[in-house]
Length: 336
Image (cartoon, rainbow, N blue to C red):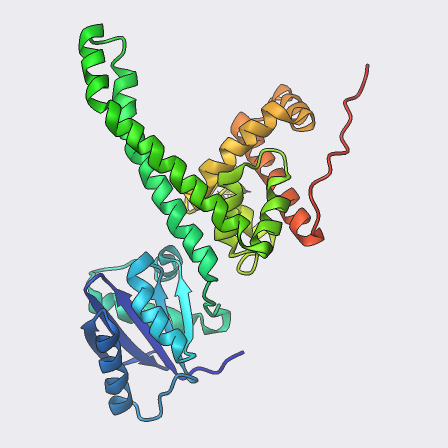
């Protein structure tokens, strides 16, 4: 376990970085810079002036994950072999209890305080390989294109029975070229995703293990590779299932016994993909279908059973990856 003295919380926006330096739960100083290399170097100079004993080894830099706005800071700190803690915003928010007031300076101090109080549970950030970062960008682009296509197509489908055929055809004609162009772009991005995977031997092998499980298609397999960081960041199926929001938790207090339910603090994109995969497995896997029919016949909640199917898929994927072999289906239908 690293021994940290200086806990530096950073609140990140597109234009600025707010740094709060904490020692022993006490704020030493706050500094705001531009979100670029020059601004970061200015802060490092200020840190050495204010805290001569501070260096990259005894300091912990903690920040929320804010997508591409993190890039300049992460790149700089990684080049200096700094200790970086990249945390989910929800974890920081929930740990702080009731919050009154909000601004960039206060947020930076709260992040630094979070790092200090949870220093025994620190998870140092390790950069993803370039190929995984590329996949992440491509899937994000694909999701945006699909979302735009749905925004255009859905009103056309919904208005079918409510406007005249002539008006509907005119509207469809107006959108025809746009939809075709979007379809072409989505297809091109999918091809780029596949070529990226196929051109990396290690990634290709992992991908084949994952996709061998019934219910797992290209979109799910790619998302699993990204979310788990090639199973380096998440290598436990139970942790992954929690991250995906398919594990029910008990909610009870005293005499109150609430129903078990999944958390809404999950990766919703991943959960939606796994749900679609579970529905596909129910349709195409005799074993999963029999399980689904048996449990729903017993009166189990349908969504609970679907989540259980998601869990089965997750455990099979992780088992295949750990064993380094494709999924083998030994199931045979029972004959009456």
